[in-house]
Length: 351
Length: 268
Image 1 (cartoon, each protein chain N blue to C red):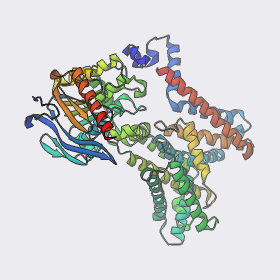
Image 2 (cartoon, each protein chain N blue to C red; image 1 turned 135 degrees about the horizontal axis):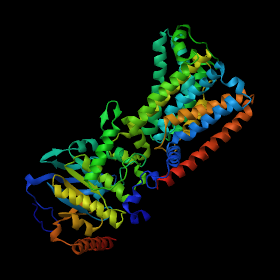
Image 3 (cartoon, helix red, strand yellow; image 1 turned 120 degrees about the horizontal axis):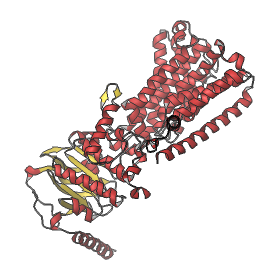
Image 4 (cartoon, chains in turn brown, blue; image 1 turned 90 degrees about the vertical axis):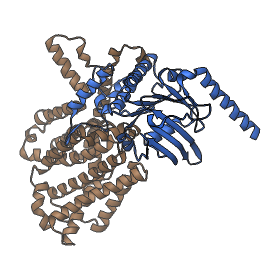
């Protein structure tokens, strides 16, 4: 109500620094400050830098941190989280979530294995069909969520269990080795030391641009921000959701294949909920809202880097896996509290 | 020019001047008949006020006109040609655009992205944000809408500014027919004045015909050339604004309410 009595110039929130220009260094400080407050990614970027400084120079892990081997391990922790997080960001922005990409991740390399070893399909088509399976799972998730009307949390819980059951039944819960014909192409997907992180950076770059600079990204935000409004503007919100479910599941399949090649084994116990939860965590730490309309793929990339830094750094320091989860959980909460507070600052800065 | 009709009947108008004619439109939602038999016409360059109580079917009619709903029967004539809108986009491609009561703005998007929503300027495969930003700035200035920045998310704006942007978006589409749903709802006096001025400006330019849905009879008579009263899914009054008054419209609505009440008591 108070809006209506304010003069127009006050309501039209311009840059807050403009009205009272201070001395030069102070203005710079203010610009840096306002950038920090405005850009969601800035917080998580600072956290990542602090973690690198801590593990690389201060902690007991310092001597081992910047070695080639450790950096490879670090990048391999980060890459699958980064890739799945891309999909989760897109879905969270349009107001949905996918719990199943970790199971697509488990199933995809098995499908490749069956296609090559049992049905004699050549390696490249087998890999493509395994990725295509991701598209199909994504379509089914979207159909049940968008068309049938189930909450996506339930839909993807169900499809996730079905995929896990399929893997366990068909593999008798035994791991398999990478089929001979796929080994060559597998180098490019996951065996070479830096291949995963290169894929992760590439996919992040592509989808970041898709989100912030293309019609698809704009409509994804519009779908989650104001579904009714987007519909009334003539946007086909169902199509946007179908697309984002299909992207997410396909990225899950891709990450699964990648990790199978990296570990040189097709393991029914890899994947599951863990990569999905890490991905959602990365998305949220990186500034993506659980309620839709807001999110950043670059933020999720940095969020995944933060998670990987903690997983790797504490491991190098010799902290066992058990207390690691306590630290991880606390770190997530701290990051979220910081985000919420910064969001309030952001609102205050604009009002 | 329209002619005044006797009460209870739609005014016959010279067909040549009509950009839009609605003939015998009906719409049911399950057991509820929202529109019984709607006949309406809109003359080129005219501002038509559509009034009626809650539940009279105003919003349903608007949603049919903008392609969101399909009528169960009846006909829509656009520039003398029968049309059937398959979607909002289809109606828009034919020159009909709506500004909704529930504001079709996306809070998280910037002012210029909202203005260009679903009409983006593209330099494939990317959005040309600079072009959209400049055009939005220019158009808002032209329309006299005072905004410091088109880069802020619309969540940061006041209700009146949001409504102004929603109107600007519709104007931007170069729509031939503009449908405004409750453009003044929940708005302060100053903001209402801004929207009223916008509508007057549009009217003066005369290249667009407007249907305004509103509750406030005074404001409707102030900006509209003609008013239609919708009651129980039918247009019951069709008068030029200068030939009627707030008092008369109020009396008709109240009288109808009393009559319906008596009927219900008698049948009970």
